[in-house]
Length: 433
Image (cartoon, rainbow, N blue to C red; front, side, top):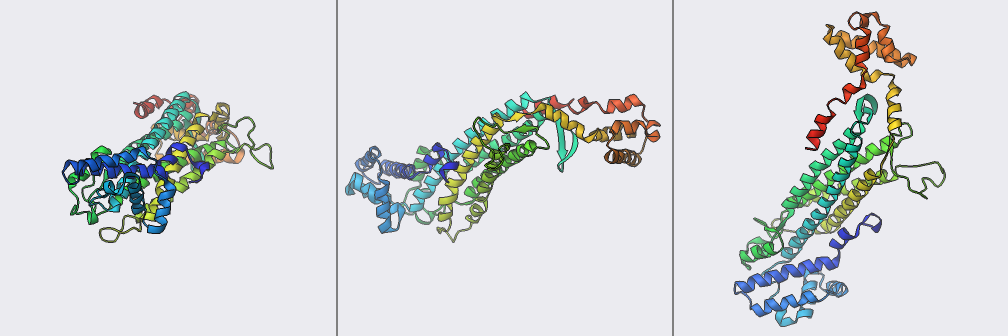
């Protein structure tokens, strides 16, 4: 991912230097395990750890790979240059390249999970804070983009909190599912390496052994992981889209922070555009586009092939780096979002009271009118409002058929907006137990 949409901690996790450090730890722990089992001399295993004090030369490994056309062999060759050929002869004993590559990848994904879980926690804290701040601030709820009934800005933030809380649980589960390692040798039969080596290495690296690896760790795990990232990205887009909608000139119920010196348009100086939320929509697309390739990687030939390799070298860093950046950005947007309570109140009046139509419908049915007849009466009066621009309550009070069943004070009571927020405490207790 380009630096513009990257944060240092996640980028470093996917760097070549970090990858080679993890490769080394896998190989060194495997040597320790084999030494304990009496498979290789203990002094050789101890000598391998001397390399941890050295900085692996990425350029040197790249140069070797240019000749060998094999990245793991290039790394092992460089390692031998550091610790000496005699000590290096027991490194990678009975192992295959996938033991290193797949175990390393899952370590990186596990560590990426920790970063993303922290990101989500920070977003949840901000969403909760804004929900509490605007708990009772009424605004118009909309369905199909049309005024529906009254809700509150607090409920808007609360539903995004609840959505992201589910994502928090999904991310924790995704981490658990991806936290496996495999040191099982060619085609995964342990023919050339003791299963206790795998157990030892996994324990040292906070992984659990893959039950059956067929030389590679099954890619349904990775598909599930990336799918989780895709869901989280889509939920970020859902939140960003709501902000974009609220910032439209016709609504102006909320807007992104517009900092001092910021410019909205090269041509129109008055513009204050929701550029961060629009950017989040684009970033969500980038994360989602990795989901299908991850699913296609599940299918491999027999015990293994490398058709998944080039895909993963791209999508795993890009998806995690992009989502990390997006989570940090959306947290900042929500934290600094400017809510316009006056505009929310003004927008309530744009439908001339029509958003209370259900309240009148229910009042009529409770007064003895059939639902079908009540619906016809309410809809007829609503149509007059759209045609004349009058207020819905006034039209109802002029309708003899309505007045046969409802007194004027009962009509007034139906237009009390407090009825729409009377159960907010109940909802908040569910969302924020």
